[in-house]
Structures are given as structure tokens and as C-alpha cells.
Amino acid sequence: QVQLVESGGGLVQPGGSLRLSCAASGSSFGFDVMGWYRQAPGKQRDMVATITSGDSTNYADSVRGRFTISRDNAKNTVYLQMNSLKPGDTAVYYCYADRHVLGYHQYWGQGTQVTVSS
Image (cartoon, rainbow, N blue to C red):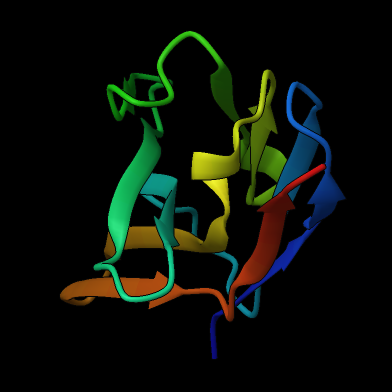
């Protein structure tokens, strides 16, 4: 049973930084794409950043230049460094992973709250 466990959320002032981590457990296989999505109250869940097993990255326009995604394949862990945070970044952040092993599978973490407020 694959589990994705996020950590690193919290309350930060505008202009501050946070680093999110997501560790996958319960499998000896790696993942194709790992990434982060976020959902603010009353809004849909949107992609923030993704990274492939070959380290190709993709960012939402709203975070490009402020957020950096990275991964450690040996640890099945993905990170999101968030700098210059804005109140508009306030949301629940969800870790995501997928792979093609005996079919196509997608996995989600339970979410971690990020609040940007003075």
C-alpha cells in the first residue's frame, strides 16, 4: 500500500519561505511523475509544480520563479521550496505521484496547510 506523507506546512508571513517534503512509502518501485497541487477554500485543486523521473519540471505561471521542485529518487521523496510567499499562496498543498507498474496508478497525500498571513 503506497502512502504519501507530506510535511513542512505552516503559517508564514508574506515574503517568507517554506519547504514542503513528501515521502512515499510502501513500495520498492519508483514513480514517473511526482509533484504538488494546491486547493484554496471554494476553489478547484490546481497543479503547482511537477517533476519527472528524469528531472524535467513544470510550474504553474503563478509560482514560476518563486517555487522550486526537486526530488530524491533513492528516497522516493519530492520537495517544494517556496520563496517570496504571498497571501494568494494560502491553500492546502497535496503531494502527487504516478507510475506505470502493472497498470497506471495515481497517488495522493493527505494534504498540508500553508497559510501566508501577517
